[in-house]
Length: 156
Image: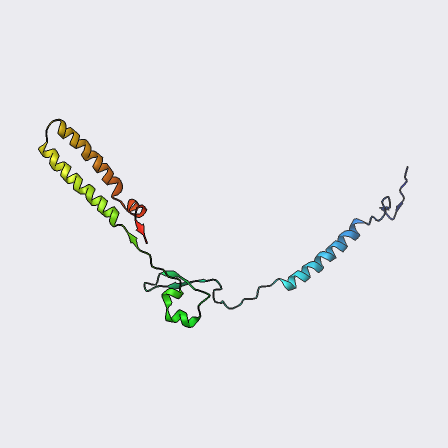
């Protein structure tokens, strides 16, 4: 059994225990010192804007719309002035929708021919031609739009 002595209003039951007032004062001093050190180091110093360090740069075209230019790091500035398209990484790309346009034109001609044949036909032939006309018209409505043209265009 352990008997604790109380002196000056403090208990000495555990070795090395200090009063809460002493501990909090020392901790407060440490916090103040730490905040003073950080305060001196943590400040914003504005600088001038540098050139973009990446290989892309934003500029404006003739219509003053933003465009992105590719800057090749291998070429020197003189070569870039001599051949701006090749040094800037531009490549030529064409989209050809001739095949799709030709297909749509054939479908429209089929619709015309079938409608003419329906006018002159009678009986079962007329019913058969009307079914064909509906099928061709639905195919034409699916293919005669911008999404179909984009999906089936030839890019070179």
